[in-house]
Image (cartoon, rainbow, N blue to C red; front, top):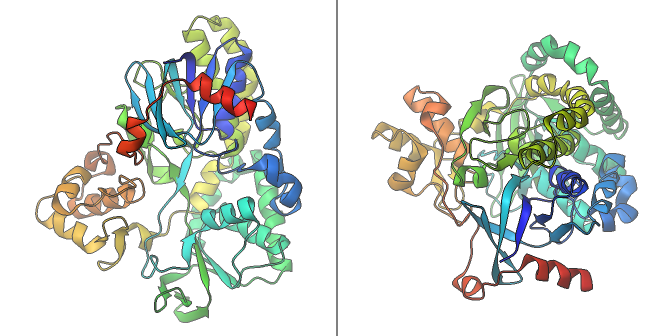
Length: 469
């Protein structure tokens, strides 16, 4: 089995910048990523797509090619299409590629697993024709495909970005149905000073809203009572605004009300997590260098707390400075000297985050869905079932598994976990921290017996084969 100084999981902005920083300090790195090409979700397939649809996706997307180019370094072994399904103490990472299991060892591990879109369970959200807004954007990036007669629903800057991209592509959405309220904007105003320090973000938002307005896309702000209608597939969106009922006939509904850290791998290693009220999600407890309470394990990027692509890139570099000093490759003085400008840039990049979090909170009706709404899609468990478990004495998500199989499907609770925690916390009157989360065990992703039987061990061989092809 190959052994490296550092194993990085995830080739998004944090993983790519970390790999380059580590190689620059003489560390031998293996970079494992599920996608066929580097970029993560934010820069997905940027090397191929930038020249095809760069004008639609914008400069914030095409700039990702700068990071992918930096991976061409002799000290970086980039293994693509590698699904990591277990990380064992020591560290030994197990993954699957091309139908074969494989393993690699490392002195230290950096998790750069990014974020997941927060599930938005509403009546009708499991109908065909309903998907997350991020999934719709991935179709545009990867294949140049966009749904016609689509409605964007929810809250957050990503909705504006996708709407603007749809306008540029000549397929504007039928409407935007937004859940943030006037009260949310008023609460956000106390963070305006910080937001102005991050004026670049605010300016981007203003430009996107102007694009959407010029395309005459209707916006319905402060929507409640949202439901998707259809017989066998999505046919219309129903909602209420200012006491007036609305119905928009459509073929596709894109849902989005924020993103949350992907914590499955960190939780499988026993990293301590705490509830982050400002972002309504759990996040790992880290020091200033991204180090966890598991020796040798670091986390950077949106998996450590939502900050966006630029912040993730900087955090990846900071984490490597921390672990390089830990490994004796840098003195503390050298570490701090390299880190100083990065910390200034990170503070500037995160300045607008409290404003955005307050202005675009998650949709309350989706955080506490109606009883008959499915919240665990894998096992078809409803919100009412979880509330029923609570009345029988169920206090935490792990017990909910035993009571009714919530979180036992292929996604291992990755998507329903926060909703189950929220429902149980609401029913018991306890905090999310006291209610807890699923205990995550490997395999983190499905793996077959055939893939285990075909296990091989050399990441170097795999990377060399890819280079040769």
